[in-house]
Amino acid sequence: MEQLESFFSALSGFLWGWPMIILLFGTHIFMTIRLRLPQLKIFKAIKLSFTKDKNSKGDVSQFGALMTALAATIGIGNIIGVGTAVSLGGPGAVLWCWLTGVLGIATKYSEGLLAVKYREKTKDGKMLGGPMYAIEKGLGMKWLAVLFCIFTVFASFGIGNGVQSKAIADCLFISYDVPHFATGIVEVVLVILVIFFGVKAIAKVCGSLVPFMAVFYIIGCIAILIMNWNFLDETIILIFKSAFTPQAAGAGFVGGTIMMAARYGIARGLFSNESGLGSAPIIAAAAQTRNSVRQALVSSTGTFWDTVVVCALTGLVIVSSVVAYPDIDATQTALLTQKAFSKLPYVGSLFLNISIITFAFSTILGWSYYGEKALEYLGGKKTIIYYRLTWVVIVFIGAVMNLDLVWNISDTMNALMAIPNLISVLLLSGVIVKETKKYLWSNKLDEYDPNCEL
Image 1: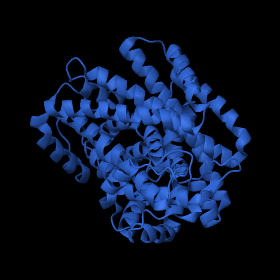
Image 2: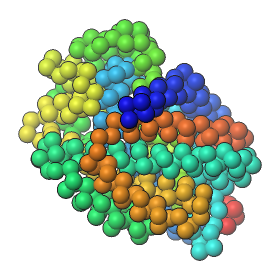
Image 3: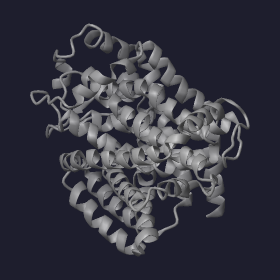
């Protein structure tokens, strides 16, 4: 196990080196420029996300698809992941994480567009789509689509299941002395009650849970920032300075390199918002939408809410708390966020615990759909029941086992998922621009695309 952990740790470090950073960040920048700053359309996109499109074909509403995607993306990466990035990469990692989100809006838009453009309709009327269909139908690279699905299935058991289940179990054990196995049993029951009823049940639960958990967490963050108000100027200067200046640290932080700040900030940014990963397009393809661009805009808001808002608030809370309270050790990695929230009198720990539990549980639901559709692409509909049964078993195993190895495997699989997806986005960028010109730049968002009706 030690050798296996060392192998994946080394592989993860290699994959998240300069080549991956250049590919991911480069794609974000390239699509931002080629699509004429789609970030400027974010408020139009937010408005669309709350607009029902009942007359269009799809399995779930645009809002339901977005909430499912947000359920999968807003997870412990927004809480523990940001704390880990700050601890290992310094305060500058917060800015790199935020920039990954801002620029990643363009890539998330592109993924969502391709997912709807190349989606398929099954005999029973269900919509199937995602990077694997874009790669196969748009590029003619079936082998690359297969690789993407294999990586997605493995990643789903890690990023979307085991680490989330463990986070819930650890939270309840540390705070309330609830045994891990008891938490695991409850998690299994709750997951079974949702995922065995399909995407509509997942979307319905996520549509109710996600807005509550996001608002609840944001209120907690704002309360802490108000407490740390006198230190916010110093905090923001420290974040910017540390992002671009080697060894720039202070206030309890250990100085690091620009590479360390960029690596951990970008890696945790992707872990959190999944822009470029290729996961969210799988649910985007199931949305009721009249053309690919409308759903692409709605999908892009997921990155805005996840990183530009939630991760940014988490980063500010952590760094300002380290600056304000000398007793907080900035090297405490996973405990860093907990220490920051503990400074909020009486309710700080409660806010954090509820957030961790709801964030992690919703991620388990959202990622179950991603992995299921990837496996269905590989083995057909008959594989779904076996995947769901395996999924609930991993939920329990994740709650009771040490998952240090799973974290490294998850980071590795995330990178391996992203590579085929980013290749498809870059090679099909001409298609993305053509669709955008037809519907968005020509102000024809209300027009129906016959291909979306299938």
